[in-house]
Image (tube, rainbow, N blue to C red; front, side, top):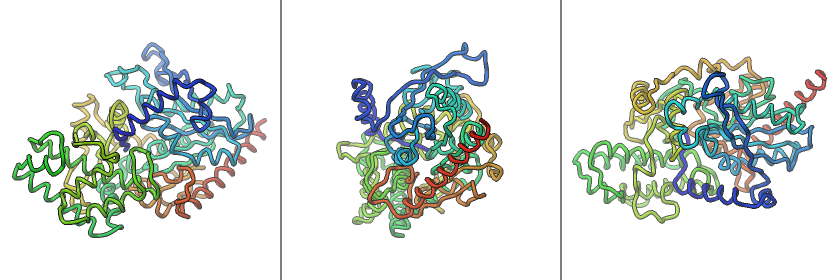
Length: 487
């Protein structure tokens, strides 16, 4: 679900190193007002004899810049599969809303990601990694909220949770599982249905394709033709030609190498569809404004389709132009998530989650989409996960644990989705009740509404944020009134 380029990984690591080495008095001004702190968290919330009743340090970011102490609400971001700084620095709507509603803002890092590694570098060994579950993460957040409210003398402050993508899923689950702690949730681009095994396995890459086709139908045709030419070279085993035309660091020598290249190329289109923002960004990679439009222009620039395909992939993998060749095995890692797991420790953590609870059996077929046929069935997932992590996936577990599509008895959740986002149709697109509200953002990509205001924003996202702000304000006042009655 998440892919972070090598460029961003290095940049973020340097940034965080600078943060940790900076004098305390400089942290506020340099980091958008956030202070980086660590919370002593329980290793296993559900077994008192597990792992020696141990604890670990869970990172979180906090700012009280706008908070009306002991009164204003708490806006809590349920961190997802990556370094928490990446989400904090790309979710400016939350701090803008905090300024309006005098809120305290907390961004919590998910266990096993970023610097919140329960067992350090051994966190990804077996059995240590077994404590990486959705349920443990939700318990982490609930314990953190409860204890921080005590420490900050904020026990009567209503809590609203926010999240994007997998983080948005967690926000929904927090409201479902811990309604006494969380008064409401904004779940942006949260594919809670498709990841629970509800839906069509061809939906995701069909919707990626639709984004490019909407720019120009010839774009889809060009991409399909380029992949077909690559297939023909592979059938002829003309590996030297493949290496040359795609500027690969190593010459392919097998069908597996070609499959890896197909995955690398498909992943580039996936990222551009997800991050099709109307302005340039550094989120999950260095991306130009309107990258889908840029990609289609590149694909239709002349008749050398294979060269065009290489240059289109370069929009994602070689934004700086500094790479002399593409190392297909280091730039992209095949895993239990066909949309990509990212790189480094974060990719290992997400791979494990995709092998256990998070169902991501999406596949391309070259009929409803423009990509090579790359099946990924439940059986494929089971074989891979058994070999990689010695686990058997539970494809229906999220549906059982978190209500599936039977959400009508819940309340106070916003499901926002952009129509350019291939994850959108895996989520809730229609309002279920007056307090289970679906907001569809025309011209919006992956959780665009969580990003800070930008002069290039379409009117649709401006209106969406206004609606979200009004609903959240209403929930806060309602919760505050309920707390007053109890007192």
